[in-house]
Amino acid sequence: MSAPHSSTAALVVTPCTDREEWDATVKRLGGHPLQLWGWGDLKSAHRWRAERVLVREGSGAGARVVGACQLLTRALPAPLGGFVYAPRGPVIAREAEGDGPAADPSPAAVANAVGGYVRRSRRAVAVSIEPDEDAGEFPLSPDWREAKTPVLPARTLILDLRRSEDELMADMSKKHRQYVRKSGREESLEIRPVETLEQLDACLEVYRETSERADFGLHEDSYYHDAFTMLGDDAPVWAAYVDDRPVAFLFMAQSSRTAFELYGGMDETGQRLRANYALKWHVICEMKRRGIVRYDFGGLINDGVTTFKKGWASHENLLAGSWDLPGPGYRIWTEGLPLVKRAVRALRRR
Image (tube, rainbow, N blue to C red; front, top):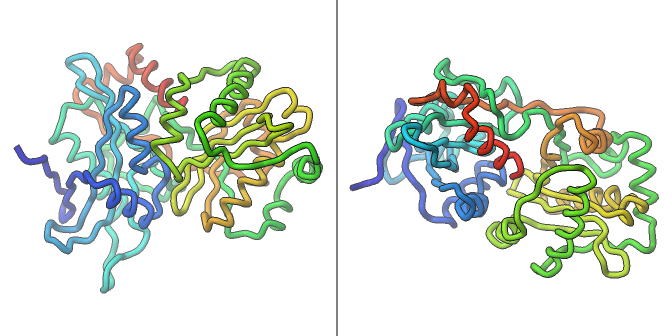
């Protein structure tokens, strides 16, 4: 049986099974790194199923791609079917492609096309999207409802890396500027890329110490190994070393447009040397050198880490938020089924 297709107006949704084509499309459209193929592979290795779909205007060979969406599905007990989630998706074309002028479809049309495809192809309690767009710039049709259980926080901090290093530094708090400069002059600190799983394991020891101190949960080591290998060059890691031992690390995901913080931590030595300041500034500058224009701190949730993040700029960002397209059993889903809470907690650990 052929793969199901769905259309909204002139929009046609079809699966994409070619990794090279998919990643090239996401990057060309300015999509978020959590929409890259490797992120879907990571989730597929850990109890989810990934599918990637392209949204085109029309069905001919030259039909223009105007959107893309990586869909993660988590199986739920019957009769609910599954929960379908698009991390920082769908990706929407930012300007017309091709030889001639063309008006891009509205975000609502692309989202509806993706939602319609899901409804036609499987039983899902909800299709949940979290677009990587500013609040108010991703209008949706009334069929979508604001999600009661968001996965990624809409409130975050995104640096504009088109600004100069001097401008970025000037926008920090006075304390952050001082600590960046002081830790950057610390002769015992060496910052370098993490290039092997053995080096990553040393960083995970730091992460375990951080989680115990800050009281948050971790995945098993194999999860971070998979993230490192499945995303490949799109998941760079840097660490600050003292005597060839990591004292702080920062695990990133990157696309052509956006750098996104996944994981990070430091041990007691790193705390004493404030290694996280020198390390984060190093990574911000490296992402800027790579031509990436947005550095996303990964969310602000009113904890100690958020206090540290807020010192890096004088502003905050608010993204479009989390939106559900309800399906059969949605009321059960929204009224606190324990499985829902476990599924969302698992996603929030990324």
